Length: 582
Image 1: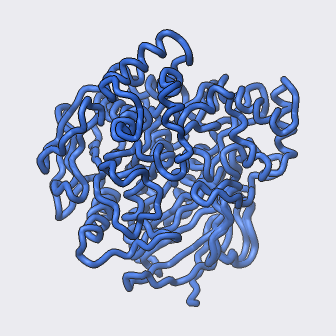
Image 2 (image 1 turned 135 degrees about the horizontal axis):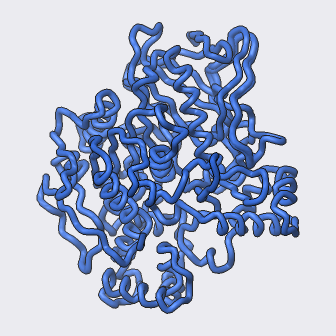
């Protein structure tokens, strides 16, 4: 293994030279600490900068990851691997730190140690950065097995050039996972637990990038953040966060928005869930600080395995409910200083070039193998309770029943929910969970920003080699949530090697070209298409050939299954008022 060394603000790292599967070469530095380990008294607290180290730290392997951020220097011959965790600027170290290994991921949802991240301690010597770090304590969403470590605030850097000749654009990937896998969002009003630590970690990581990425050949003044699902919502939250100002210059939010109803909890609801979690773990108390102290003594694995017990019996009836998510905050140190909709209406967000979009059948996720325990007859029987949850209305009220009937009439033409009406169910779930929040984000941002805004819809038939990926019934048309990721990154479980010049290979080329060209210039250009910026009347058409990435036509809501528009046609449809009244 050929190794390379770099000196960062905290110490020296040793990475490695890697050959890509397409015949190129890149340089990998993994498991780099960007914050102190969120353990002991730092559990559930904001991140702090890491301590410096002495000597050389091995960065040739991955360490544990929390939020699975991937710091991808521009034009890596092969897509980078993501990483995750709650951050604060690291402390300097002495000597060369080995950066040939990666770190680990943060504890699942509730385990961000309840504190904002702190900078890491410095080290002495050379740190091995040839391996990845540990992932945070979590349950794998597909394998359903527990893994991870609390010491997981690490990131990976991949660069196509060594030694550094000129600075290149930087792309920082924020992974998804429903704010459950690889992130931490416990909130407990009246205690020393800080809310939204998973987001604070991201700012800590971006702070590390700002201070150190030039040592790897990256331009700290040309950083693009991009993410999918909860990662896409995180990108949008960072657009709203004052503490993230100046740390990035472009943004891409895939299938995620801060305005998605299930992504944002009131402080009272999140606190109630924390107390239910405490009760499930054996702590009967009404004192929030006592509960916080108790939770710091509980092994991370127990918290992860019990975290869904924070939901009430009523809340557990709903599909895809996130027990602990981003939370409203108050006070001068609030990460998001107000309601996201209000902030957008007032123009209080970072006005940078922005790409955002969805897949053509996001709601198929609700019918995927992961959620296939869904009982359609039970949903049909409790239709008036299950659906309105996504609209923040109190269950069981007359208003809920009225809205449920409107939804049934609009999507199902008053037909019952059965196997025969699954396509209508998918359309409704797509709108309720993803599309309306996306649409609202775009319309509000266009009103208050002069920066370029591009929208897209991803619609490409999944290749047979990805059939193991649970994307719901195949007879329902459209691309499921997260399907585009198989054309952006390699996968450790499924083959993403596509036949040269096949439709799949071209889709991968198009996506990577669009995203990387945007990261370079802030303008969405490619040799395969000339997209138009949203004008208020129509959305941009990313790729005119609908077999690859089609034009955007939203919302999905319709009374009959829609026909695909002609290639290149972009339609602007008014929002549906009954969905999520803001």
